[in-house]
Length: 171
Image (tube, rainbow, N blue to C red; front, side):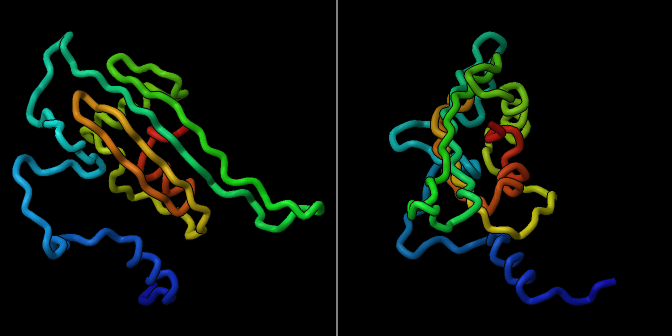
């Protein structure tokens, strides 16, 4: 049994771990209403429909615009002509659920992942990824079952992105 971890690995694990029970920011006003869903940021002036269960045929619409930027080019060296490498490519798709559609190539799996996590884009994962920094930025904007969604995050690499978001950003 290994009884110690190299300091760099331990530091990376501690930095990547979410802070449980973090104290509110000084001067922050308490909020009223239902507790926010992690990964879902309510839009000001819009009341979420928490606790409302849609009936058959009246399910609120789900439509998300998903964008992935990265990973970065494999090299940062200048080309023989002296040009810098291209910026990371950005890809955007639309995801619709109930029924699954849009131009997302794995719409059914992405909708199933969102349903399983009750609309949370980012969730905990037990999948271990290499500690290679090759950043990927993602953004999700739209509505999930009538609730506004505004999500943006940078993941350390594509493995971490897949582990934390499932099929939602698999395009």
